[in-house]
Image 1 (cartoon, rainbow, N blue to C red):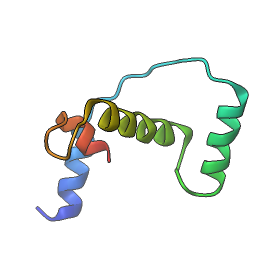
Image 2: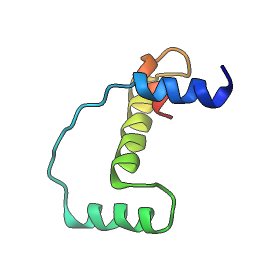
Image 3: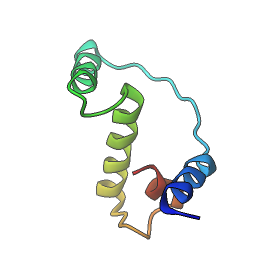
Length: 74
């Protein structure tokens, strides 16, 4: 199995849950600007990366010591 196939298998193994929350328009406008600029492919991706970074910072999660799903989403 090559690296590409392994990556596809890891992505299939990630189970994501749908959540909803309220955010100010300015946050959404900022997210949309990042997506338009090509920094992220979607609002969802940007939010996932922001949550990942928050958890790493606040819980001192390091590569390899955080839950597997957190590392796989990077």
